[in-house]
Image (cartoon, rainbow, N blue to C red; front, side, top):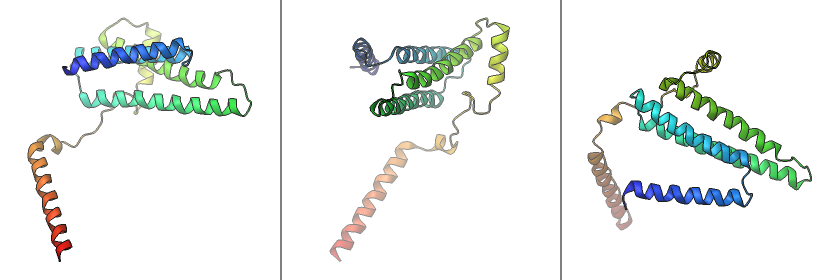
Length: 179
């Protein structure tokens, strides 16, 4: 199978599994909406990067890692809510709903930012609010810093040197054991 075919099969299986969990009532509805918003954010982000000619795999991977971290936080929130339920406090799902809603709003803002950078007309009030939010130095446009010397390294040569060093270390250990 080609790489994209494997991705397509995994994506289809993930969609079926997610839909089954939803039908079973395991996942609350806002979490499903959050997953959909994350998907839309990824799509609009890719479109924005393509149009602005700023496709960057490092930034894309950092974005995916952030989205994975959101699910870790949601899992922790679900554990806290479960704890409260176990001690007899009926939370009504408000704890996880609040945290999920927070991330849903963030995804919505990100989609709006991407759309604005694509040239989609945005109402002036929203555009001004987005400009103020983007003045934050920790905004999403912050680059992941990579050492420039890594681009000049011949990876195959580095692997061969590593193998030679491992072989030398193994020989030294053998002579130590024999002596």
